[in-house]
Length: 199
Ligand SMILES: Cc1cc2nc3c(=O)[nH]c(=O)nc-3n(C[C@H](O)[C@H](O)[C@H](O)COP(=O)(O)O)c2cc1C
Image (cartoon, rainbow, N blue to C red; front, side, top):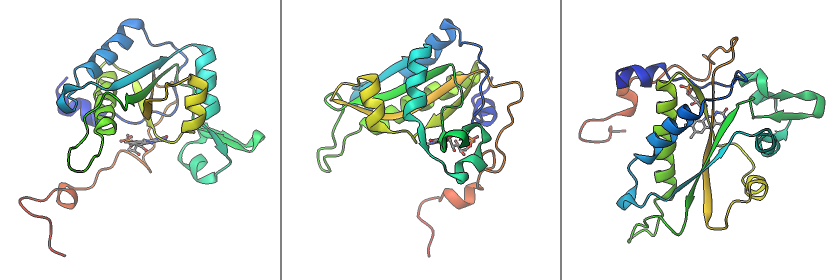
């Protein structure tokens, strides 16, 4: 598939089939992340692969928040009204928990800013697009309880979580969220040749 085709066919999936992701496919996704560029090629990404019922139950725990209609409107999948909660787990059979090691990444000499979050983001993006190219659905997750995740997954002190990718086959009745995703602004609103637009 042409890269542009993959870019355009990838959509966020928030409803997964329970079919496990094959080991070869997991390896392909991880390999795509491995070949990502990182600042000074430091490769500070650290990825925890979660695909056992015990670990997925932990994800469910640190993606649980107080009831908020706004999120239910975006995806009915997260509605757990019975317990007065929303749950942003969506039933994915595979979760890639992406971190970077703060002691392993490049730091900008002038600003002192670490490149770790950028590196981790690039790695996650490569993995997301590889997953799309082999017929898997993904959703990028930023909204989770970081402290609870670190505790439950026993994340080392020096690792900083960046995001999670949920991965799996879309459920048979999955439909993309047209209201939130899918559409894009025209290039004229986001890209500017040679100078920023005059106010
Ligand atoms: C940095 C980032 C954070 C996101 N966080 C979440 C999240 O916590 N939960 C969620 O359901 N979707 C999350 N998303 C998915 C976006 O809502 C989605 O990509 C966007 O609406 C565009 O839709 P599309 O991916 O179908 O094109 C996130 C996406 C990005 C890139």
